[in-house]
Each structure stands twice: as C-alpha cells, then as structure tokens.
Length: 391
Image (tube, rainbow, N blue to C red; front, side, top):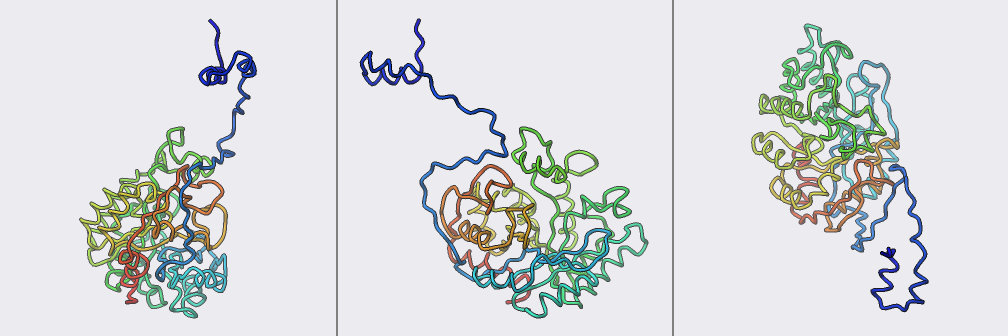
C-alpha cells in the first residue's frame, strides 16, 4: 500500500493531475528540534485591539514601591538609593502619579535618611514606611523593643510599617540560626498594637506565589522563573506552607482589630475566592495589586467581580523598584505604569503583563478589566487617601 505525505493528500483532494502530483513528492521541510525553553519567544497570531494608555484617567497613589533600601538583616550601613528623587519625579509627572509610598524606608538612622531625602522635601509626593528592628529574638526585652521602635519611627516621620516575608520565612531565633519565628509570634504583639494606637497602617508581605512552595519540576507553572532563581523556592527544609503562613497572618489580623493591615500582592494568594472569604471575615484587612496583575489578568471575569465587590478596599500598587534586571515585572518606568493602566482601564485582550522581552513569571498573557470610573477612582487614589490620612 502506497503511503502519501501531507502534500500528496492535499493535491489529490484538490483534484490535481498525476503529473502535478509528482511535484508534491518531495518531503516536508525538516522541523528544527531542541529549541531551549529560555530561547523560545512565540509571537501571538491573534489580531486584537491594542490600546495605549499613556496617562491614568485619574491621579494615582502607588502604595507599593521600593525607592530606597536598608542594608539588610543583621547588616550595617546607610541608606541605599538606586535612583535620585528628581529622576523618579519626572516619571511620576508624565504618568499622572500623585504620590508614591516607599515601603522599605528602614529604621533608625536609615529611616531618618529616607525621610530627609524623600518625604520632607516632597511631602505631597512621597511617604516613607518604616521596617521592624528585628534584633535578637531571644532578648527578654524583644517585645518591648518592637513597640518602642514604632513610636520612634512615627516621631521620625514614618507613615506606616512594612513587614516583609522575613517574618515567617527568614528570621530565626538568633537572626539567622535556630527555628524560624512565626508570623503570629506573640513577641510582635506590641508592634501591631502600637501601629493601631498610632493609626499607622501595616503593609504586610507574608508568602509568595503558591508555585514557590512546590517542587521545581515539569509540573510547576513557574519553572523558568524558579530554575533561574532557585533561591526563591521555599519547598522542603523547615519552611512552612503558603497556607500556614497565610493562616498565621490572619490570626494576627484577628487578634488586632484596631490595626489596619494592607496585605500586599492580593494577600499573597492567587485564589480570589479564598481572599474574598478573608476580607469578609476581617474588616481591618485591605489588599493591593502590586506585581500580581499577571495573576489577576488571566482570570479577568473573577477579578472584575472581586474589584466590584471590594472596590473600597483594593489599592493601587506596583512593587516598583528603580533599577535592575532581576525583577523585570517591577522595574520602575513609563512602560510599567502603562501596562497597569491598560489592565485596569481597557478591555484589551491577551497582552503582556510586564515590560520584558519574555514573560518573567509564567508563559501567559492577560486581559483588561475595563473598570468603570467610580471603581477606578477608588483604586487609583481614594482608598489610599483614607489609608494614609490624606482625605
């Protein structure tokens, strides 16, 4: 029995003569095999509208940025400033950004430098948050230290407290040794209480994407990201699960009802149904969208319902950092904000969630929510005004 290739079948189906079919005898051209996944850059064949949103429809308060950094856990040194205020202000003016909140203002002398450098000269454009002075957890005065430091930071000008996933995933009994200290460790209660008494909101980052807690294998949707940064993985060893971290954070929120908690990255969860349950349960819980439009934008119908339901408790944030290529989904600049505005304001389909050559978090694209003006106003600035006492 004769075996035909694809061209011969097509030729016969098209009624070509035997002579014409002979021209179809050649084999299909070889397909190149073995393209490395980090070299794969598929181009979409969809023909869909592309809306350029150069400026936000309403002024923006970005509540999640990292304009400055402190030296790090257990290290000494002064304020780290990747870019000067003048450079940041120029982009803010172009993109209709009214104010940016620098969450990593540090503490002590570093906080003083951040406030003097950014907040005092531009009080209507920048706000600085402080960070815990972790110290030695075994110190008997550890709990009192936390509360005292919040009061000192507030007097220095800090507008809130930022707690990173250091608490729960990094900090140990002797800073870097011993067992991990849990998010709901009672030694931090004076810190949470001080924030509530002083009306200082707590911006808290507790966990990471769920995939970071799973094996780095062929089933992990963030394989490329984790393969490039294996140190971002919290799978194995003595790390808690992401759900354990979230539940510990929720116990803190429940235990301190007079303190406002801004849970960053949509409360560190891709599960909007679960986040909705938490927000129904804890009225002192808010969320922001920094570095998570890649998750929200691939579930646009659920996200639109979420924004509609919690319009007065969702804040605009980007998790922007001034420079660097390690986090391409967060690098501060015009392109970053244009993507966020497009996501929130348009109903465009299947576009990139980051200003990067290749998707940095996972190989998918996103869809715009097309939020109506009343919700845009809430998300862009009104909710942040209330949180920061600006209204």
